[in-house]
Image (cartoon, rainbow, N blue to C red; front, side, top):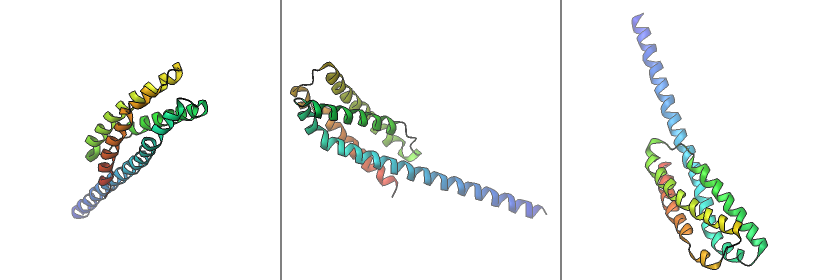
Length: 148
């Protein structure tokens, strides 16, 4: 009887630890998938927005599109920052969050200038916010490797 109870106890521990491992793998996969979606959006933003910004200086319709794009990217960044990374991705996630904070500052600068009616070509030439996305992309590529 003791052997049966001990065996059942051991099997239940193995089962529970197996579920925990499976849950951890599933969480990592979900995090990697969310990161890749964000990477794709950040890449599109970095590719499209500089030209959109230049056009926005002289075209009110493009200015509205530019503002919408900035607001959407701001939301995407905040959603990514709120993700709960797996333990093995914590360091990379924090690095991306650091770059995201820089990008948010640049986006806010553009939004403030749009609101004040002072968006000008000199501001557009300061593309630090767009270079930040290249750094983000590099880190997100490393996160993608977590899923492999």
